[in-house]
Length: 185
Image: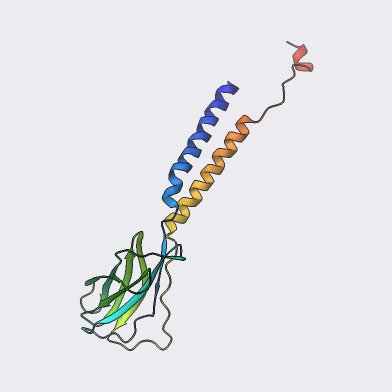
């Protein structure tokens, strides 16, 4: 019975280890940061304005040769939900991209820059209104939560599988058949 239990736990540990090795590449190297050159200000409806940004893998290495897409969505008051989409082009140093954007109407617009691993949401912009006195800089996007949670799950399952495997393989002290109960048999 004990050997069967050890064998089952060994297989569970081996399966968890194999799963960790198979899934780990999915979580490796798949995130980037997007940093704006400057936050757009004083944007007027129908007037083109430029944006420039850097894309860096892991926040460090510039990524060239991508096809980023800038997507802006009107949140009101006029034409809520209207979408403007512009392809960004390589410009200047490696990993730097630029786009010319024209927004058709005034109001608040949410926007994001979609690169190879997913969208990077930026601070909403106002069109047709003066920029606030203390404009916040656009935040650099962070690691997607799914990558962090998935990576932690892989590590936790691998550690748990290793612990089960180690405990199942640990030698047990020999059982002695002596004492008052042994004499009554």
